[in-house]
Image (cartoon, rainbow, N blue to C red):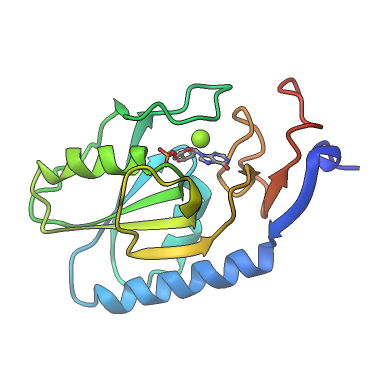
Length: 185
Ligand code: IMP
Ligand code: MG
């Protein structure tokens, strides 16, 4: 029995569906940025598995950079309303085509703060690629140019999304039964 089995209420998106959709997104991005310079920016830590898989399906040359923001403290599941940069980019994004890669857009506060901050550095283009969208929870409106899946208002884990920093490695997206999950697990 897997350690998460008793609080996994359902597998929302299985590995096969995730991989198929990520491949489609990679192909779409490859076509849209043909003959152009492209920089993928991963928002740590949730965007890591998604960006790695996505990048493998992008057939045009591209660069990667990483940034981290804090909006959810460890053990908290509500967004604070604004995000603070805790690790900045190494690269200069001036005049570059940038795609921000995120695991999920929930309230929208994280991505909208990051967008506002990056806009001031004057990239050529700035788009958002999110694996998951939870529209019912939206408080800040953000454009999602490339989207994996729209999901209901449920707390999910796996494929980058954490449960108190664990389970980001799982190959599927599962729903947590919060009545059965205890943070020490
Ligand atoms: P937002 O600022 O509310 O849009 O929050 C976005 C961030 O919250 C994501 O990057 C995730 O790290 C985290 N988050 C939101 N919903 C979930 C969830 O269902 N499971 C795990 N993390 C989540
Ligand atoms: Mg998180």
